[in-house]
Amino acid sequence: MLAGYVYGGGILAVVLAVVVVTLPPPATAAPVAECDPGVANTNVTGNSAFDRNLGLLAAALAANASAAGAPGFAVRTAGAAPDQVYALALCRGDVNASACRACVAAAFVDAKSVCPGGISLYEDACLIRFTGQSFMDFLRPDKWQVSQMTWIPSQASGIVKVPEVGWFNAAVAKILAALVEHAWATTTGNNSTTTIKYFATGEESFNPKIYGFAQCVPAMSPEQCKECLRSLHDNAKNVYMGNSLRWVGVYSVWCRLMYSVRPFYGGRATLQLSPPPPPAVETPVEAGAGKKKSAAGVAAGLACSVLVLLILAVFAFVRFKRRTKAVEADHPLKKITRAQCMIFDLPTLQEATENFSENNKLGEGGFGSVYKGVLSDGQEVAVKKLLGTGGHGLDQLHNEVLLLAELQHKNLVRLHGFCLHQGETLLVYEYIKNGSLDNLLFGEMH
Ligand SMILES: *[C@@H]1O[C@H](CO)[C@@H](O)[C@H](O)[C@H]1NC(C)=O
Ligand SMILES: *[C@@H]1O[C@H](CO)[C@@H](O)[C@H](O)[C@H]1NC(C)=O
Image (cartoon, rainbow, N blue to C red; front, side, top):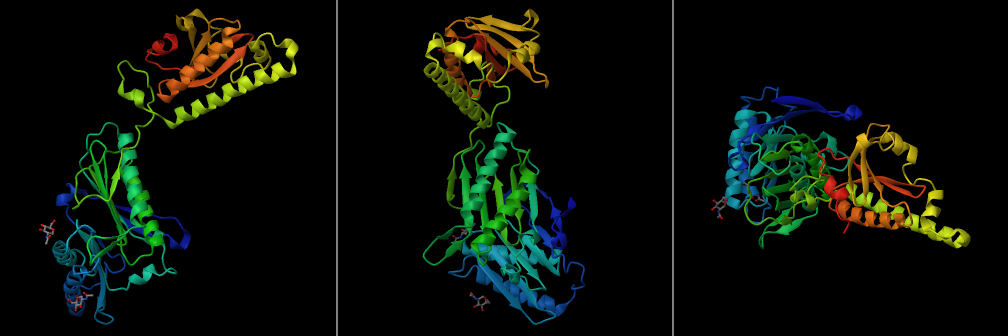
């Protein structure tokens, strides 16, 4: 499949050829190639001087990139204009010298047969680029434009079984982001003579386990490496989000980023990651949903904090009124009722529940009745009318909020707000359709 992507950015806009390749898992991945857009159509085939220079370069690069002390990376040029050839080779950071040499040599053979005039080619263990134009200048600060990087995402056809796609995506995002942030800042010596720059491998203990690597061309500045990898990650998101793909690799000649659910690099990963927390569960209350109870969502946490603040405000208000008007300090709830409803006013809830009609009653328990309601914006809610309109109201509210803080933490049911009116305490919850809300609303508080 071949698709054209247009990047905005005025005159800098470039059309990038994006090849999404359906491939078997990476251990046996076929090389991914991108013909050099500038020379793909020029007639260089049969240009013997160019070919001869290219042959010299291929041999030299394979030797140089795998030479003792080389960081698996080499850049060379051969010949003179108009037949001058420029080339680059970079082996994956974990690949040993003999495998690096073999990969680079094979990549040049493959490359010449695909795009004889210039190409970026990505093998499993290395990448090469050759072209008739100088390209290392691109890294000069005045030339560097991350938006002009060409990139090629490739994705596996296989869908892997995951507990939940959203969660899997979060796990993939986590490992890729960690790899990006680690790689650009990393220089490691894998033995006494070789220094590997801008290379990171990672392993995340998800189910399935996720492996990944990120690497940049060592001639880049740390800033360029960071921009390059972040840009690749942004592009990779378009591919992996909403899917559970076995692997996704995003490549540019300047940097590479990839994850797979199979191990594909040698050695122990430099990054060991724990899985992200499970995402917030939409309809969390389900019979026997023991696992889901451990889910903790950001929304739930927020709602909880808001609640705590509200409760503090209620108590502060009560104390304030007590102190300022000691005469009326017979009964705290009375003071609160003056403030009308804290979030929902009573008419709103009366309207929502058809004035707490029997038809809307979802059930009744030791602590009050619960009614189904529909707010004016169409949102369905469950309104719990706490029993006891006397002085226990505030204590009940307090208990209920403590309970809910606990429940919110477990991400079970969301409290939208509450209403205090004329000694009545009403709590407004998210309405959960499958009806097993009863246990929560009618169950014991402690
Ligand atoms: C690179 O390879 C060429 C040809 O094999 C050799 O002459 C040169 O010394 C090598 N350079 C390095 C830095 O290894
Ligand atoms: C280099 O790596 C390849 C592939 O992982 C392996 O087969 C080979 O034995 C290694 N060679 C050396 C000298 O370690």
